[in-house]
Length: 196
Image 1 (cartoon, rainbow, N blue to C red):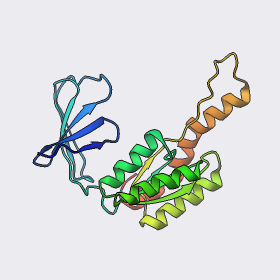
Image 2: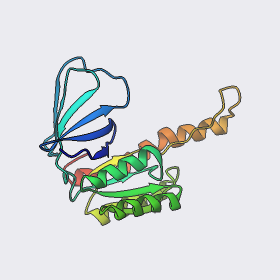
Image 3: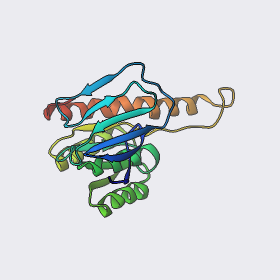
């Protein structure tokens, strides 16, 4: 049995328990009310969520995202970084984007240092021309786009009485408007690959 741990996309810490099985320790207290079996024709992973609280068992193929590209916004740190690292760990190519180009390049370097595939690009998700250019570059690099992770976001630590209209508009544009813009230009590329 290998005790190696892996960071997983949204469920917390993943530990190999042998025979190609992994056990996830969920980071939150969400309880499964009944057994659920999730299966996707496009993926080689089948996940069984057990009815016992806070546990998931799954068969994970180490190269399940081989020849698949994910465009990740806000990937220089935090959740975006974890997604990019995990995608690459499962054999995919991570297209790491962030307003912080140095941070994005560091994440791409970390992925490559672990034997993964990654590219970095500066991206301001408030600028339509940068979005269109980034999507085109990612599609050309990967022969298409298989997944989009909209992680970029901002927080202005002020309450409603302190925040002015421009600040509110900025938060809404980055945290909501950017999702619309990214999806609008990425989904057609995903459809070309049979997804979307």
